[in-house]
Image (cartoon, rainbow, N blue to C red; front, side):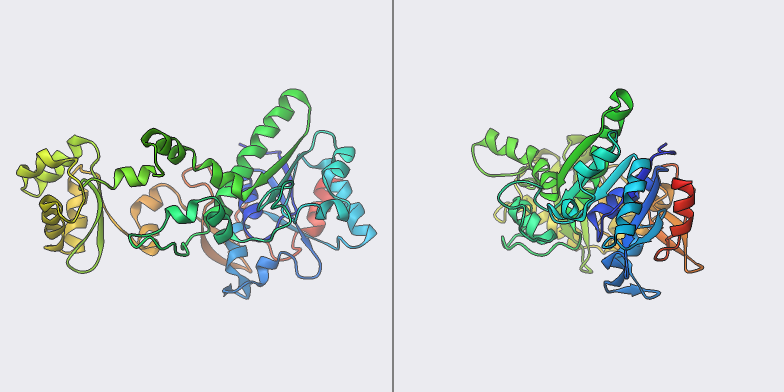
Length: 368
């Protein structure tokens, strides 16, 4: 769908490469510009697979690798020539760094007035926080996201997924496509200042409106987990089931399936320790094992699902049906990677580039 779109990706680590990964999977021609001598630092981050950082491998299939020394006049001149041919530039350096390097938006605009130029950073290119360093946990903390993920004890923990990085990458890809459509319609280029905190702040819209409605700080999750019909329940072998029977019909189906029709009137009964219905539902789940409840979930239309590990989830038939994986080649070995955009028509580029692998090819293709 994006065949013919030329993307020059100067970004590193996770958010920017995840943005360009999504574009590559839609068919864009993405050239990953890597600086000499080591390329993207993510290549050298533990843990490793075949002596290459797993983070790099996860986010860079379907792209071509161009190795350049950006500290030399020759390297700078080469990037300028490529910018003239590009539709999109993505960079993720600290604010102002690309200007010092001679490849910032103003320089790019002079070379190519139609360029869509995306700067992706933690806190944005302007404002009080722009010079601050940060990582995912910081962006989640300062936007209220981490507090909202605190458990029953109210103590925030470190999530097992870097939400800000991935949300920021998605936001960048979305903005790039909007700007590209604008360019196609008007011939005008665009500068995009996208930050990871932008993405997380935008996710707070629903919770903020709910807090206004109830005149107190709360969230959609807080409102939903008030009920016995919307809870995580433990099985007798220490696993868990998620019951999301918000609509009455699903709660009725659940009660009938477990032979507890007398519970039907308690659909919105509070999930509080002093509520006997809540205790009865918990005890019922505790009477049977995870396998029993998982099989029941497959038979009953009650919004009941097992709480799976990541490995279990990705081994589901559902993951195969949604085409969550692609087979790619890296160092002459086939490996499965999770797609950035499951459930879509895949690009033909099914490889992970070694450092600088496509340098000559890119120059022939873009500059001849």
